[in-house]
Image 1: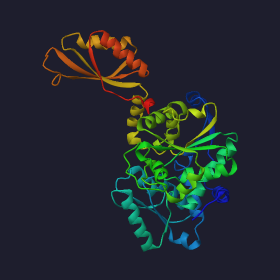
Image 2 (image 1 turned 60 degrees about the vertical axis):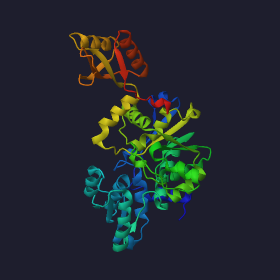
Image 3 (image 1 turned 180 degrees about the horizontal axis):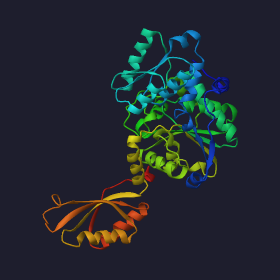
Image 4 (image 1 turned 135 degrees about the vertical axis):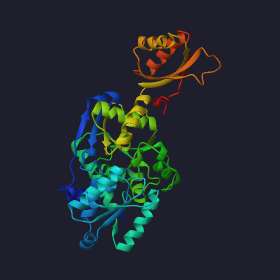
Length: 411
């Protein structure tokens, strides 16, 4: 199983009728924020909301007639399943998708609406993959891996070719890294044409499988933790993507959860783009201060997916506001006599902050029955504003206990 730049050019022609050439627009607010010229490759505008359509379409187009008739199968809980289901329907190729039982209901129902046969099996992705392998053998279906597949990588690499056309003077491209298919394809495409362009990968700290592979010299299984960038939490980078990427990628960084949440919020506010955690990873690398060498350069951020779970979007936004110092929580020990709460509220208002929520805790306030703990959630401007607010309250003789939120800039 091998791949070269010619495969990517061929894939570009092959998928042209089915996959959109997405915009790559300059963002003035993000450029000001990151101190360089930022361009956003908006691949979340694909029909199913992610770049995965590129590889799926290419892999399906390469099937022979017998494989097309029998159909394909994949284990996926997300964007790969959606891409296969959609393009399988367009090409009249039967698609079966095996999803773990915990998969988001919206992705299950969307795959079904797109015409896929969805089987929910097992509690983990590994369980789903094992079942898919057995099902493929039994029904003689072609298994299409989401990232460890030459046709998939070639399809994903077409994004790199588009970027070079749209931003011909680009200096660096920042790409999320999960299983490695996207960054391997982009790096191979870009380096074959413009070897001086930097290709930089960004992982979630909770699923840094590419870094683990670099450390061991080969892909290894790692234990992942829950992450906002769930699309990157594969546990092990693919063998073929790793072999390609290790030769062409300039460096790989890891970002924490606070930076990911803040990046999602920044993209909503400044770019009017609602993206999933994986797609926010490139911006998170800038927000965490890990790319100072790109100051003043032309940089493309690959916003590769927009399928964020709406049931958690409000929580993600709140996490981002906390990470940005725009939402804080603290406990103030105030007098339980008339006027105690009014005094605290007046102090908060005098600093230009806004109380979002306040609760009294008398039971655990200690032996002084004249005092009460007021647990406050307050809207602020930034971390400096929080510190000035705390100082003002303390100077008024009120004891304040911050909740200890961590500034993501300390990443």
